[in-house]
Length: 209
Image 1 (cartoon, rainbow, N blue to C red):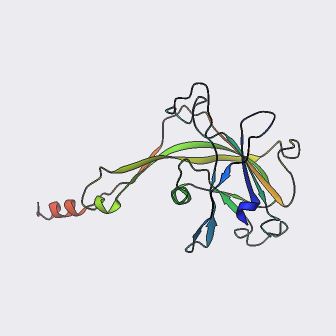
Image 2 (spheres, rainbow, N blue to C red; image 1 turned 90 degrees about the vertical axis):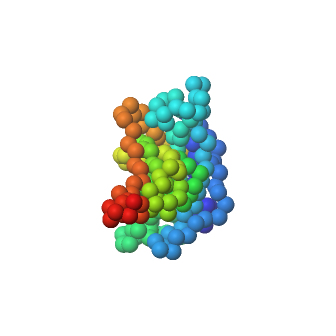
Image 3 (cartoon, one colour; image 1 turned 90 degrees about the horizontal axis):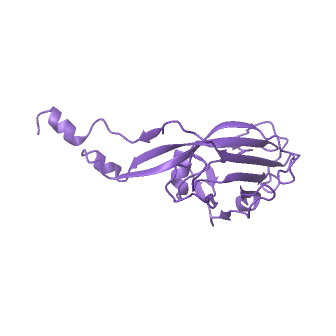
């Protein structure tokens, strides 16, 4: 049902959105939060100056294109007129920078999209570094680290093109989100796993080493 209700298109050309992004078959269900997640893969933006190594916050990069997300709440059998329990009457959208749905779900702050809204969001990026083997960090071994980018929706506005552009439907049962990457020359924000105490440090403190 979710796959049928959600469309994602890259906005690559002024006159016409690109083809639909690819839905990943199946879904993930997280019992602890009672949520179901689907993944949609979109192609990276390709520019004439791209070599695959640019900062995704610049104009010349292989980062995400502008995206248009369309959610049909009628297909989801959600009443757009409800005013209670909006957590169950809305969906959350996360824009990931890695091909790992579980990591995106746990590391990316979402934007909640209720029925009947047309939103425009700008994205900024930060670096996340995780221990590949967290259990080893207890022994003071921190060499194995996974590094990836995280997209943050910094500001969310009402979309001024809703009801004007033929590509952005305006209806009580449909919601849209357009997202684009900001040009940001400021320093990177890096969030890194760290462990102040380890087994080795503990032994050293009590004179074991």
